Length: 555
Image (cartoon, rainbow, N blue to C red; front, top):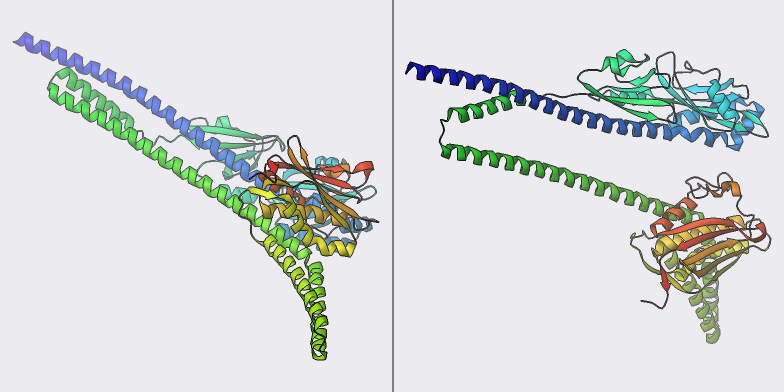
């Protein structure tokens, strides 16, 4: 019996030693697995946050990138720089600074010396000379850009554009304060570091390394993961650094203890097969519930993501519709003077004929009264047609595409522009076969109104002005060609015609949004718009191509 007890003791000790070793091995393996999962989560979080911060940085800089060129191309600014009118430039720079939200703006002469400087620190951060890199770029006619940290430790980014007359006169400088980006990073729960091409820290939410050379490998080596995004235009690198979260590390020893307990119970052969069957069933149910919970959570996340995207799409469509409506109202505003004359003339005529009819009625001349009343009816029908057309055009579009008769939309646009055509003595022709196009009727009227209105502006100073809107079938669908005999469009600006705020009109004659809206609406119709020169180099032709069209006789 002693041998039996000794053997049993030996076997139990051997079993527990093997169980202990196996538990350690499994716990270590589980811990390493959990560590890798936590590392993957940290890397994914760092990468996502880095991309978001890059988008935020680009959005901040894009707000100011086009401002110096826009201001530098202003004729009034060019004249002031040429004449050295520092007082006017100082007033203008003050408006630029506080209306744009920039940190500072400056005007520099051809030698790169500061003429005018306005900032939000009462001039204490003045840059006396343009940096060499920026000076070389603006002299070549390019957009100058660069960065620096001022004496107060504030990170700044610079945009500069050349001011040109007959020769290079100077430059307009816009300074962007990147510390506002740094203030946003303060709320982040992990380090974010923006490093310039020399490896120095420009913007960060870690105060200790600001302005110092950055060495990610030595500072964040254990327990951290790093993700970097290169910004090739500026030569910068954005580092997103995330700590590996092992907050659930207690799960590892718990799993090890559980495995050890199961193995001990198995080796001891204490439990009956029925208990083992129950444990197996519970384990399967636990796995099933966990899987269902994960599927439910993932489904909920996907549903929320879909709802967010649908909401963003609805906001985008609402913004586009609001932009179209604003453009229509702006067009109506531009037509208000001529439309007022178009209403006042028949009203005055109606009043005169009505007064004459009263007198003729008193004199018993009923036939002449009838003629006067008939003419009055014609004038009221003329005003009614103009009112219906104007109200229909001003109505909001429902954004639904349908088959639209292009000649109806062309007539509505011509009715709205008829007063201008009479004043400018323009011959407006609408030619071509009937056809039905896949479009929005109100939006198509707006497209034609914008093109015809631009054509009227183009032939303002042309002898015997002519405008034609011609429809024709092509192999790929149907085309509408709006042509005029004006001065035409220069080749240098054809590529920028359909960009927002691009315009060839004199200053104050438009915002440059009409052709951009035409381009966007044609894309919504699954069509294209292009501009070409007229025959023999005179005039301009805008071609609208509709890929979905059918003869007017089809249902």
